[in-house]
Length: 170
Image 1: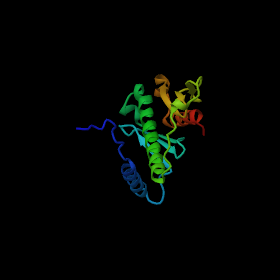
Image 2 (image 1 turned 90 degrees about the vertical axis):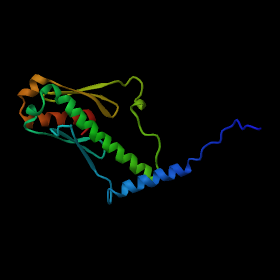
Image 3 (image 1 turned 180 degrees about the vertical axis):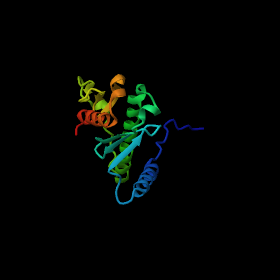
């Protein structure tokens, strides 16, 4: 009995067509065009971050009673969760659009950051927040818990938004 020791390469054309058809149907569900901004909140709904289509933070909303919902030690974590959720949605939609258009290439990654370009630390103007950026996104956030407890919500919101704009560009 003869045995073929060279496995046939699976045809992927059908799978690619199916995937592209799925992406096209997902993009059509958006209506005329995909969203131009992406908003996400932390699990408690207390902090909401809005990104523009270029992944820049255009708004940060804080409930006035955020201190009652969670302590200041969780502020930076909640902020980062909201930011990352909006960033995920933005990149997901952009990927769907590229897939539907048939222009899928390798997505840009933070591994493409040139050697020697490490983390950049950005402090907010009022000093309530410190962001660590690598490449084109925020890696971590660190709030000054003593200072944010005493901050008025509008001043804190303005300072957080300014920190993101300094870190990612206005």
